[in-house]
Length: 214
Image (cartoon, helix red, strand yellow):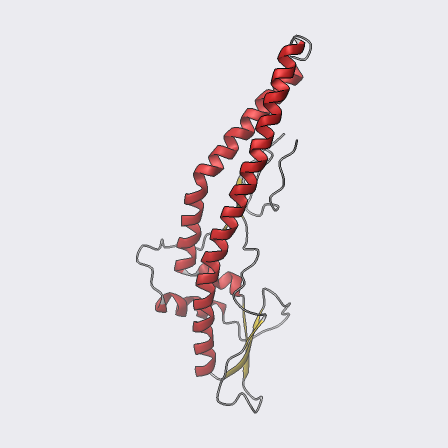
């Protein structure tokens, strides 16, 4: 059994508005205004505040990640012992090891579920907070620049667009919401929920978390 405990993935859901973000420009009634596109997920993750929030979130949950990994290693050790020493272990010792194995598997499952729930709540709160401010920045920009409609390309397929506002909105957001201790450099992908099973190095694009195997 392998272990995949804590990995980085793209944000799953945001709740920061609908797929269509309307800008109320003066010429909106005539329908002659501009149409823009934004990847709201990417924009949130690339802001200085977003980078810091996700880095803080990963740091906060690192001890729980390590505890899940420790439990997984203990489970693996017991399973290895039962498999490799099956012929030499007494019946009593095998029963004891199996009870210990079952207890640790239940603890791992419960701890993983609790960590996932807590992580999701904290992540969604951070995304909601940043997303609400991002939408305000976007609405102000749209009204000032004659946009009657802005589409979220993270939710609706966009095959061609000349007015992608994502990068500009990140810059405008950072200017309006400076973060004193934001780390420079490229945006770090938002952290995922703590996952269980399989000792395997974290991949840049991992699969969603899975339940611990019995």
